[in-house]
Length: 115
Image 1 (cartoon, rainbow, N blue to C red):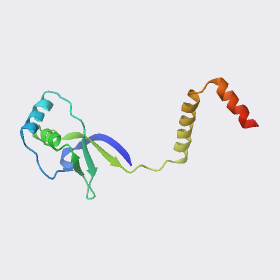
Image 2 (image 1 turned 180 degrees about the vertical axis):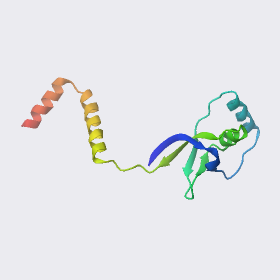
Image 3 (image 1 turned 135 degrees about the vertical axis):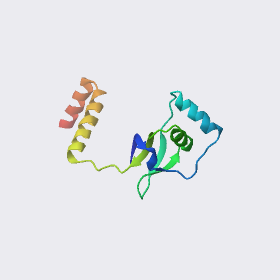
Image 4 (image 1 turned 90 degrees about the vertical axis):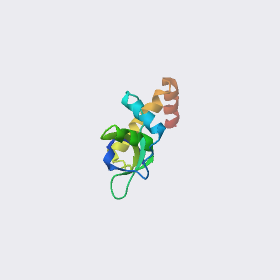
């Protein structure tokens, strides 16, 4: 599974309860005054849209402010790597491994491989 963070449409998020209490209202003020909020956590719903896992107060605060999208994190199925992607990944891994070695240790290792 791959974790994704992106802005999603608030209307596509299913919420099981609406928390409306003083902390939600102070969060509204915080966002209205330009304060940052962390992304909410959602999961893809089998019938489309998303189900909220964490961030109900943030979602309700954004709804009260009339926002249409909210930053959210969720998991998606990772696509299998194609052959060319595997080669690119291998090239990066080798480059990173070699960058930590000195020319002397690389020469020694190459000589050992020849014997």
